[in-house]
Amino acid sequence: MSVDQVSLFLALLAVLAQAATAVLAVTAVARLVRPAAAWPQAVLTAVRPVALPLAAAVAVVATLGSLYFSEVADFPPCRLCWFQRIGMYPLALLLPVALWRRDGQVRWYAAPLAALGGLVSAYHVLIERFPSLESGSCDPANPCSAIWVERLGYLTIPVMALSGFALIVALLSTLQEPS
Image (tube, rainbow, N blue to C red):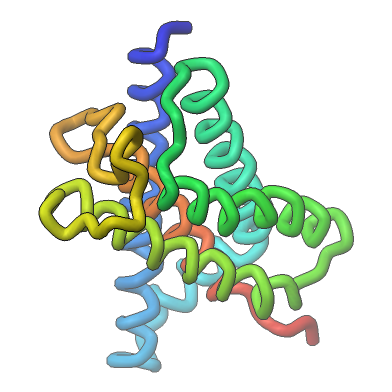
């Protein structure tokens, strides 16, 4: 597969992640606004059994995608990309192990890690869109404002990472304590 094909595939997965995150966010708001409404509970009942497997899959695919971009496509990761990897790579190990152990408590340590990774991704997207905000902390030979991939008019590598982090947080938020 070519870099264009892989980047398009990962971009389409990011769009799916954004849509799923939006559905889960709307569901959470609906539960707060109309606690008696049946449909939010129906959505959560459908999502909960697959939330941890999906979160694990998102983390593994995001990790493999970042490795593809750096090791196969030869896109050197910038400093902010490394910080995003620090957030995602442990999730690619923690979430599958939690799935194997049926550990719903994983949300207490995986969700903060994903949220922090998402904040770095959001900052990276801001730097990409407004390069003048880039400070001296990024390498001039490999600036954080460099855009290696842009699909569908807005999906860059940091936007894809942000989509993955957001979906992981949303999925982990649906997990509940075992009864």
